[in-house]
Image 1 (tube, rainbow, N blue to C red):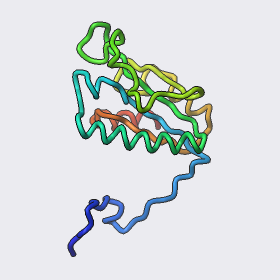
Image 2 (cartoon, rainbow, N blue to C red):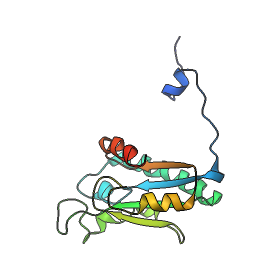
Image 3 (cartoon, one colour):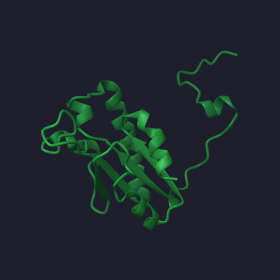
Length: 150
């Protein structure tokens, strides 16, 4: 069987599964590391980064319309360091995803957004049963992030 569509199938689709409709009434959205460091800093992601920002913006706009809790996590490294220098504009959230009033911004000093931050307690306070995590980069950290939130 040949797939002639221009969009590749997901693993779920290949296995015969279907995507569930998102329950906006009971979820929170967490954006992690959508920072200038990945746009014009030491680790630019180029066109892939631009596409990721566009997709994140679509999700963020929808979440704002649904009035769900939104969290923005930023990484701050050492002052005058090579990456995520808090004295530089590279730690700022990208322009397209700037937080609005009422959205929570949390600064982390480690790759893990839960380690030594208030993220877990704030997610518990908002009492949503489903949390969606959108991370700009660092896929190798995902495993630890997921384990930390359990």
